[in-house]
Image 1 (cartoon, one colour):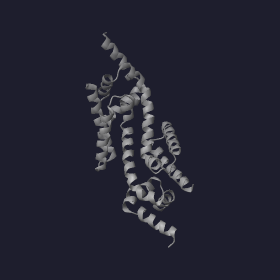
Image 2 (cartoon, one colour):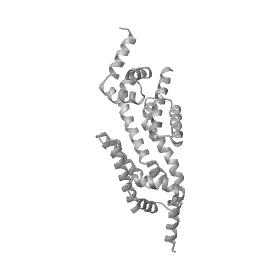
Image 3 (cartoon, chains in turn red, green):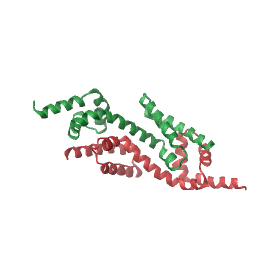
Image 4 (spheres, chains in turn green, purple):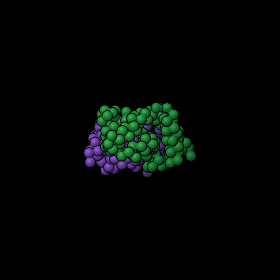
Length: 130
Length: 130
């Protein structure tokens, strides 16, 4: 077996792992409307061995950041906090962290968002009373 | 008519305007599961006259920022651009701006996102070829 074949074998071991397939390959291939093989080839071309090994961890932390940004947008917090300054930054941050914890414990994004909107309304009422 | 009553009248003129109702009051009262009156009272309590007058403009620009962040999250660009560095920042920015323009021209967020995912796949393939 030559070096290229060995490298490909090692890359394959990583990318075929259960966690990679479940969290990255299968959902992304659906989003990109391509086959699993096509996406795996793409990752082999784009990433070296070290990156492949490290990347499942980075995917998880990037997912957290993405969720935080998405809640920021869907709750219009950039308006209420940054522009209007009627919700304190810390309150908005705590609300998002709480909702992300609930999503990570199994709650759907939609349910968490719905709850978040109602809690945001309560926060606004509290601010109006001050 | 005393000063308080005059102020309330002027506040009412702003908040009852077509653009305020359509863009802010009606959608937010649905999200917060409250009445239009309740939300209007809340804004009167939270915002002074100057803020009320200026705010429709800030809402529109905050909406742009929110959309940009949401696309960033839904396209997982914080992973592809910031962590993996396999999509150049400018390419990701241009993709988002293009999608936001399409949404502002009437395309639904879901359709724009679907298209964005396919374009992201093409960007990744282009990067893999380089």
